[in-house]
Image 1 (cartoon, rainbow, N blue to C red):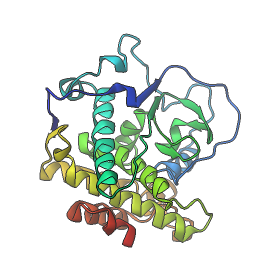
Image 2 (cartoon, helix red, strand yellow):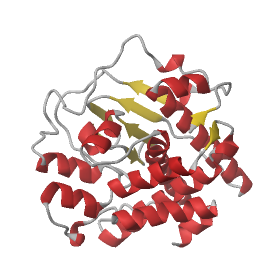
Image 3 (cartoon, one colour):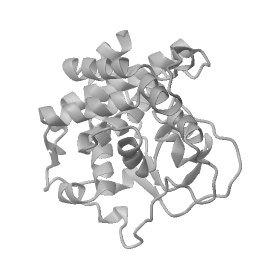
Image 4 (cartoon, rainbow, N blue to C red):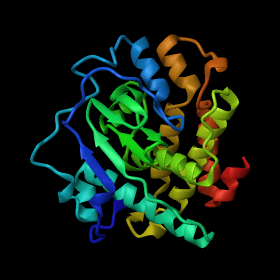
Length: 278
């Protein structure tokens, strides 16, 4: 999977807070049932202090590289942070057009790139939590080191579209929020339905990804990598890896099979209605 090298990117849709850091303290409130919430728990089980001053999930930031340099698809093909810009542009382009087609208004949501910790309207977040969407400020938060952890700790194959799936899942929560479908109740079944719908919405975007003009092609191997990433963040797989047993009564996101099936359903139909009916 590659980006069209001549396609212009809009880096203004991504806020760069890498290297800024915040002081320890304050609540962690994850909005929208973040894809990485269970990874925060897993970090504790694995003996990682998610509040440590030097987060093991943080990576050095090259001060010479800024998002303002992410100007074209060629940059997205060369740099991971520029690739995130490309995905954000593609995903929001698709949903903006889709909402217009449905006579609705899509409000763009910035993605915040950070390293280690970040403070937002939903509270203090640590990179160990994984990516998340905060409905209070309508922003997606992402530490790109999450992709390394997904591969090294939880066995995902990785790859560009696997990263695109993660970003698209969080924007799925934004779509839910705009449609009044984002459940924030403490009910387990509601939480799982919310997460699986976001997986389905990520699949809808993947179906139309090349049509947005940012991606040149999406191959079967790209789709397989995205499905593999969906399976890697299934509650059952993470619990088996971190605690040696599966406890369905504590699930928040759904099993690996459920997450893959939901992504596949959106990918196959390319229709938002498929996801809202599930």
